[in-house]
Amino acid sequence: MKSISRRTFGKTLVGVSVPLILPNRLLGADAPSNRIRVGQIGCGRIARSHDMIGVMKSGLADIVAVCDVDKARAEDGKKHLEQLYRDNGRDVPSNISVHGDYREILARSDIDAVVISTPDHQHAEPALAAVLAGKDVYLQKPFTMTLAEGLILRDAVARTKRILQVGSQQRSWKQFRQAAEFIRSGRIGKVQRVEIGLPIDPTKADDPAQPVPAGLDYNRWVGPAQFAYYTEQRVHPTKGYDRPGWLRNESFCLGMITGWGSHHYDTMHWALDLEKSGPSKIEGKAEFPTNKIWNVHGAYDVKLTYPGDIAVHVSDKNPNGLKFFGDEGWIWVTRDGQATASDPSAGSKPMPPLDASNPLLLDPKGLKVKLHESDNHHKNWLESVRSRKQPLAPAHIAHRSNSACIVSWIAMKLNRPLTWDVKTERFVNDAEANAMLSRPERAPYGVTNLVRS
Image 1: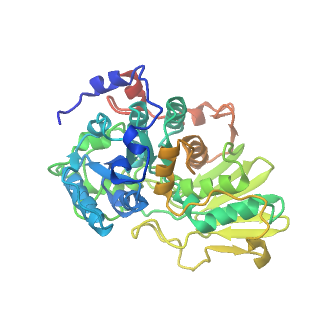
Image 2: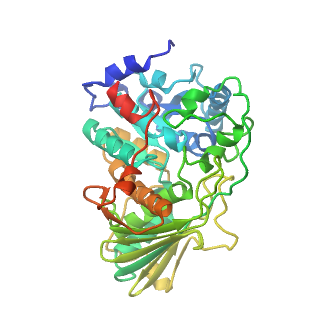
Image 3: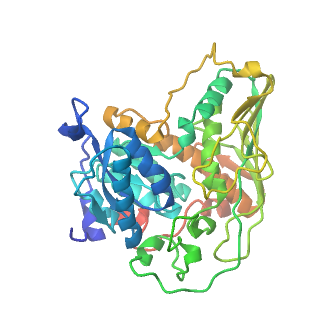
């Protein structure tokens, strides 16, 4: 397929009339010809260990194309996908295509939806381009790198009526749903405070510049971020799929405050029935390395005030998970595993996935609130693609939980109290803090350059 210029692609998005109905082949009986055709954008660690597996296990979709700016990873992604077809007892398609430019996938009329498993700084642009091109989207968390990107993407999803699910898969884990049901049903009475614990990533000395590996489009990989010399420490392993270096660099990721924070803040919002809200006050402090590459935050402490004067304390010193305190008891919830084997440990002390001050608080009988049950986050997304009903973690909800993480990071950077207006989504009388809600985007990449094209 011929490469598509950014300007040509951008022009196709101006005034686009996005179809709000599904192709005829997706209607009717459940047959192979009715499965949703998906393109996989990004073929790294999370794509291989989580996203591609989830889509294939759903039984509702075929992944028909893979894309990565690293040619070796794209080709390996195809091989991995072929094995997933075999593992699921299905014939391997002969026409799985491999791409180095996500726009080639979006230009295909035979692809209905895309999964975006790229580094954090590369979430907003392809997601925005996808919804404007009429594709439904599964987007890895966090929703966006900056709040400004989040506003643009959230509004575009609403305007185009696309189905976008963010990878807040804790909503599809039984214990997190149950915890939210118990708390929203009043089991612990009036919630007074919440403690959240998140892991942190290590730092190390900066590695020197290295030659860019053959087959890696490093300029496109850097994308909207400020350009910096290539070194494997900054990007991803040239061999294997261990935890990548970009997760420790603030040009590409804000650190664990959004990495795991996007999960736990989302669970908190869900349990408190504050999915469309956010904090009013934030105080934060953190240790930031002086290194230029692995420079995301280390130890940190954040305090937030939520509606109802709910006090939230987020710290690496707290156990990894969430503990909700009410005037009638407490409920604790955490994962019973890690997203990937190379994730930071949830702590050396084993913690039960679900616990309470009184076992009776966890009695599933007599709940006033019942939430949608899902055991496959990707399947929930694909079911929504068919039904056109909102998935468990839609754009407008994901934006709010991500925003809370971002304002926490800003408070950590500034090390002083901040006041947040949840309606205007701006800090009150604080130009310095408001300036951190967006970042300059290196042309021709990023959402602002995309909409201007």
